[in-house]
Image 1: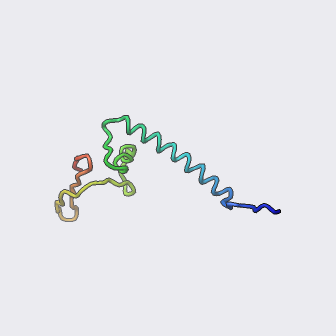
Image 2 (image 1 turned 30 degrees about the vertical axis):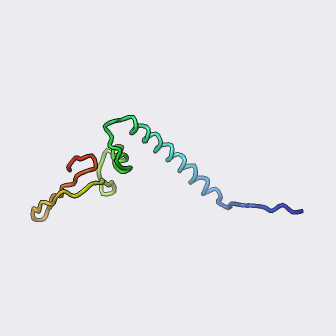
Length: 89
């Protein structure tokens, strides 16, 4: 009787990506444990926790919050945002 052969067919590229994901997962776990032990880190959302570990704000970074108001100043408007921890930026 012939045994059926099974092949997942993911290949070496999948294995390399899996190892990278494992490495990233380990980094995220360390960050989460650090956040757990630091009472100054706001734990209301994942973005708030991740923002603590990002020292710079750029177009790619995101802040979660609620718009408090818009101050029109001609070409440049100032937008007040209340972050989850209550801080206004």
